[in-house]
Amino acid sequence: MQRRVVIVVFPGFQLLDMAGPADVFGTATLLRPGDGYAVEVVAPGGGPVAAGNGVTVVAGALGDVSGPIDTLLVAGGLSVPRHVEDRALIADIVRLAAGARRVASVCNGAFLLAEAGLLDHRRVTTHWLAAGELGSRYADVEVDPDPLYIEDGDIWTSAGVLSGVDLALALVTRDHGHELATSVARGLVVYLHRPGGQSQFSTPMRVRTPRSEPLRELQAYIDANPAADLSVPALAALAGMSERHFSRVFTEQTGLSPGRYVERSRADTARRLLEVTALPLAAVAREAGLGTQETLYRVFRRHWRISPGDHRRRFRSKVPADRAPTDPISSER
Image 1 (cartoon, one colour):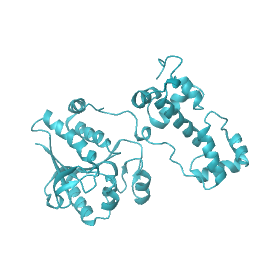
Image 2 (cartoon, helix red, strand yellow):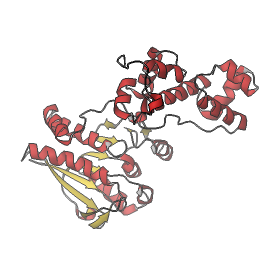
Image 3 (spheres, helix red, strand yellow):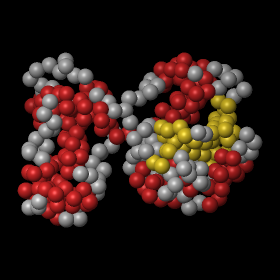
Image 4 (cartoon, one colour):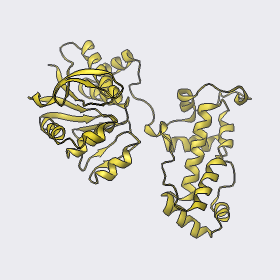
């Protein structure tokens, strides 16, 4: 029997949140006819529904959906904040979730599940830009901003936009095994399991801006001078404070200790150098203030769960001639 997948959309939804998973399920069905998925797209009121990019899809009426559902999947989009207040939409999600074997969301569609009370006491993820707000708004929800998707019992949540493809491939793997999921991934020319998490795509400096003007200036100095002496004694002297007082105030106002902030800033500098230059890893490490290639590797794995060499291969842009390497990069890990 085909597994019934109901994808919930709404005016202003993110088209890829729907189309990505739908294509994964559709490709799986082509490869396993009669034993794949039957996908339905539904929306409040049904009929033509415009996505956030202006493309219109024709959806069934959400209120008319009845009967058992294998997978209920809720899309996200920039219009989600408005639809969180739609009590009829939330009530329909609650109703359909009660008859579904599992419930999933893509991107900030997690807000709609949270508003429906389906994420209470669950570990979930969402787009890294919205993770802080999700955790603040729904205190009973444990939000992890890094994974591309998370399974917590019968609730699956995924990160931003194309992470819906990662989620759908994981569901196919769970339903039909690794071999079919691999064939689907090959057919769609995507990774079956992408390395790393969301943090490799985000700006890692997710810290509070200090209230104090001198600390804001010091923060800018750290970011602009990664190879300088950024030890606590040196930074405290620049701030005109004792080391103990400086560490306490900096941590209180930014949410990170000085040492952790410096490491994040240097890691972000290294990330940018890998993306826009062809400098050897040893040179990247020196310019970013990390010292050695081994330290660069450890810091990269700690912050982004991926090696510097892998990150460069995936994200490097066209390299300016004056940033070309003077020795081979054959030692990349």
